[in-house]
Each structure stands twice: as structure tokens, then as C-alpha cells.
Amino acid sequence: MDERGLHRLIGTIIAPERLEDDCAIIPCGDLLMVASTDMLHETTDFPAGMTDWQIGWMAVAVTLSDIASTGAAPGQILLAVGLDRPERIAGIMVGARDCCTAFGAELVGGDLDSHRELTLVSTGLGLVAPEHLVQRRGAKPGDIIAVTGPLGEAEAALIGYDHHRKELLEPQPRIREGQALGRAGASAMMDISDGLAVSLYDLLAVNDCGFSVDTARLPLPAGVPEDEGRELALYGGGDFELLFTAPPALLPVPGVTAHVIGEVIPDPVVLADGRPLERRGYLHEWKA
Image (tube, rainbow, N blue to C red; front, side, top):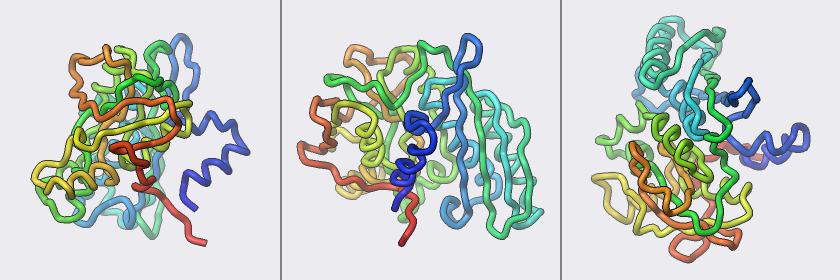
């Protein structure tokens, strides 16, 4: 079973609509607060060769990317560290602080414990005006499908294209782009860190329409053979771009690099070049 299957089980315990987005959405005066939590483990989430500074940076970046996908401005970050060796904490915390500073957030506290495997849990809060909130639900037939940058770069680094190591180890959440798209009126949006194909199926699960992409329009990782790059762009995880839908007339949006890769269609299917797209990407799985 993968994590999406477990989400369905959790949806029988808490309101299932609470599970539709990467962030919880909470009324906060005249604004909405968005909140997200992410857990990272060294053996599954931190590629070999990462510095402690990069580990701290990544732990914050994954949560900021969730906040970006709602169109919110980031606020506070809490970081809990299950620490395997005490000499690592300074590098981790400096990396976390530097990522917060780079994207307008503040590291305000957390928790510390001893653990056999380095484990980090980051929690982030952001604020957004209700009229600028973007969720996964909201796509409409006729909307364009677009992404904010190249796809497949992180996965390319994992398989040996070392010129993409920075994209893998020091991801850049698209905070500014998310806010601009929210203000402009994007109809649906999500972070794409689990891969394009899986993300399109996540959108399919909460919208009454389908998604058709043209693989010739995918922005591919530089320096990778085209066919291999297209496979990485479809199925590779670890990219921190935003996937969004919008009325065609919305583009261009100032400050946003948008690559249109397809369109929203009436039929509830996910297609690539007119054929069903395999649901494959980065998924946490449990074996029976």
C-alpha cells in the first residue's frame, strides 16, 4: 500500500476534504492560515554526500514549497530534530535558518531528541487572503496546465548528472511565484515534488475533469538526452516547481516563468500525448 491509500483510510477518521491539499487551511481573522508538516529521514530522503547545512535547508524547503502551492506568504517554521550525533546540530540549524531567511520565513523553535536515524520534522505556517488562496480543487475544462520550471533535474542528479546536484541538494521553493499566481487567479495549484505524473493523478482525485499533457512541451533537464530527460520529467521526484491550471488568458503573469504543457479536459483521465499516463513517481510504500 502507498501513502495515497492510507490517506483514504485516514479520511474515514477525519474529514476527507482536510486531506485534499498539502496544507491545512485555518480561518485566522480576515485571512487564512495555512499549515504544513513534513517528515524526512536520512536513509530515504537525504542523498549521500549532503552536508548537514544542506539537510537543514532541505527540511525547511519542503515545507515552504507546500506553503507556496497555496499562494500564501510564509511566516513561521518549527523544526523538530531526532538527532543521531550531537555534532551535527549546528550545521542543520544554520541551514534551516538560512533557508527561512532566503524566503521570508522565521525559524522560531522546535524540538530535539536522540534518535538512531537522523529524522527531521518541519512545520510551517503562512497567511493568505481568502480571495488569493489556491487549492488543488478548482481546475476547469479549457484551462491550461503549466509548470514553473524544468522537470526531472533532481532525479537526473541522482542517476549521475552531477551538474544538477544543486537542484537536488538545495531546492528552491517557488514562494514568489506561488503568491503571484494566487493574486492573478490560478484555478488550481500544487507542489510537484513527488513527480509530474503522480501530481496529475492527485489533481484528478479532487477535480471533476481530466488532464492532458503534450510531452513535447515538457521543460526537460539540461544536458540529458531527450528521451531520458522526458522520462525523468514525467516520473522523477524531488523537483520543487509548482504545477498549476489557469484560464488561458491569465498568462503571462509578471514574475512567473510558466511552461504550458497541456490542457484540462472534460473526461476524468490523465493523458500524455493522447494515451493514458502511467501513475508512477515518488511514493512512500509499505509492503505486506
